[in-house]
Length: 395
Image (cartoon, rainbow, N blue to C red; front, side, top):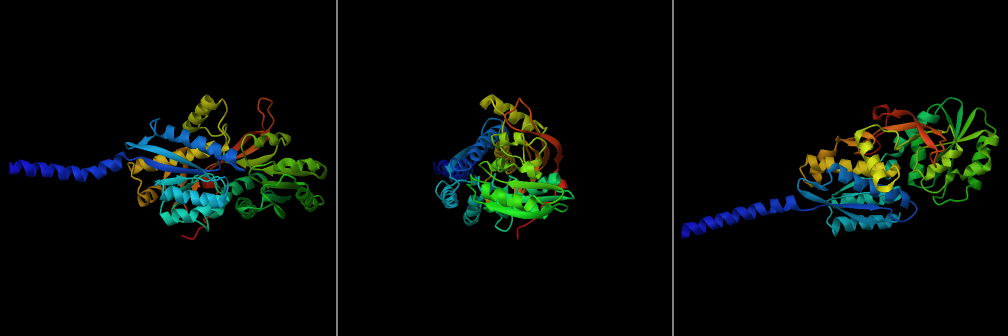
């Protein structure tokens, strides 16, 4: 009788030891997605959300599980407001007990959120906020980014416009995104001459005064003259209403979402570099995303859909490598230097600053009646190893 009782106690003890491990294995993996569901960059945010959910489904073979743990995404709307984004991230880590977070859409919001990730010692995977300072001077070890940074944009766009005898004026939003973008562009330009920087409020709709200042800086100069635009949201191409052609002034810019690229139809032959356009990358992941997006929405995936999808691929790749373990330090050591497949091809998190090294696409705009937007024809893929992207953090 006593022996049977001792065996029962031993069995109960063994169960007690196994229970926490079993519970941890079956516990949901909680991910907060903080993005602009509303606000000036709502279109960008919605695309990222679509891409993230499509990517999680694709990467898990439709199960939304890794190592027997269900992935649960908690969505929060930062409205493009830095203070709100900061508070939402703190609530996600502290109250919702999420394992990690993805987002946000706008660079000023991201910069407000970085210290929160450090305080709670939890990963923030930045997608798609662009400012260099996110993985630069404001970075901490909990920050990873699948989105491209301003330097990647700038280096790729310099390929298109940095030529001898060219005079360039930059026009950008007076924000972290705009100013970091211009700084990176200036650092990348080696042959052309930058003659003026024009900064305007992010919500500008009347570009008349700014356009006139830029025209005055360029109109009397010899050679090729370009206004290079770094802008998120709105329609900065209204500056073309000032009849720039009369002064021999061209417009150049990077890629954008399809609705914004409707304005590109005015500029056939315009060159730039894009982060993504659905017809450019040739790989199985992009093929699958494009097919799935057409099936669900009857439209091609857009600029930020690819970004959200890429962030999902990074997360699932890391979680598979850790066998579903969401311990932050284990994830960091796994993700540093990690390569993963995306709709843009292979990306790799650089160990030094956790910035994803990735391809960009040099394009020329073609007008095709079959499309409502100016179609970016691929000139060539600019591979990660071709871009000397500066390491700007102080690790």
